Structures are given as C-alpha cells and as structure tokens.
Image 1 (spheres, helix red, strand yellow):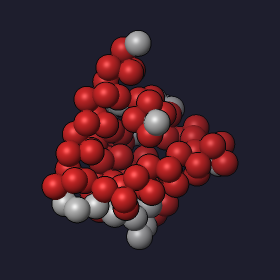
Image 2 (cartoon, helix red, strand yellow):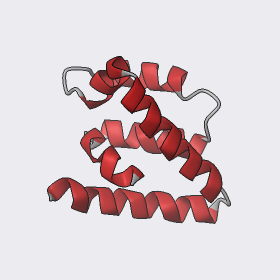
Image 3 (tube, helix red, strand yellow):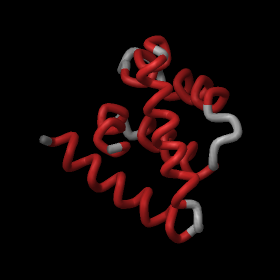
Length: 94
C-alpha cells in the first residue's frame, strides 16, 4: 500500500509537469516504453530495482538506455533513483 501512495504523488507530479511542458503524449510513451523495457530485460530490471547498485552506477546506465527520450522523463527516473523510489515505478506507469 505504501508504494501505491508514493507512486500516486510521483505520478501526479510527472503528469502536472508533462502537461505544463506540452509533453503529455511523449511522457506517456516513455513510461510505456521503459515499462516494456524493464519487462523484457531482466538485467536492466535487476539493476533498476536493486539497492546494491549506487545512484552513480544506475545513473550511468539509465542515461545511456534513455538516450533520445524526453528530458523530463529521463530526469524523473533519475529522481526516483536518487530518492530510492524505484519500486514505485510499476504503480506510476499504470
């Protein structure tokens, strides 16, 4: 339940920023795309969700994986990682 409450706060913030920047469709597509990527790539999913990897290590991988994505979405994921909220991503992307 706690992840859902956290996810709701983050999802709302992302939605507001995407609307303000006129990037709602792009951010929605990025959410779906990254969610699919996590489903397809166990190695990426493990890195993203594991507390064993540092922010710097995760950031380095995510920046490469998310190259070409909307900066708002990329920065949003990095905030999730920095705040140790990666586990909420599934509920955010719903």
